[in-house]
Image 1 (cartoon, rainbow, N blue to C red):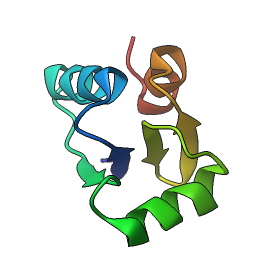
Image 2 (image 1 turned 135 degrees about the vertical axis):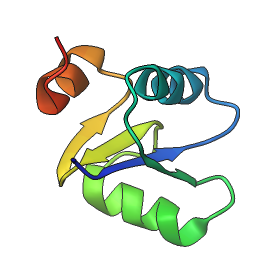
Image 3 (image 1 turned 60 degrees about the vertical axis):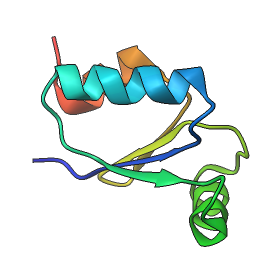
Image 4 (image 1 turned 120 degrees about the vertical axis):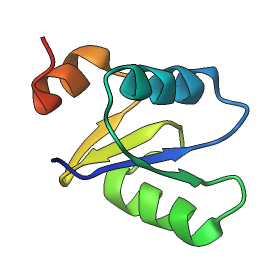
Length: 78
């Protein structure tokens, strides 16, 4: 099982869509609300070089935004 970390905010529609998509596909993930957790915000920026959410970390592979095609590729979803 791949380790999936999501950096998101509650007001971001792409974050909500991403989490719903992963739940539909039965993937477990850790979700950090970077609007409330400054340490995780700093970690997200360090990993991605971006301030925008969502940022997804799948076993160290960083995806900025809800890039369904890239997520499917990394997770082996057809």
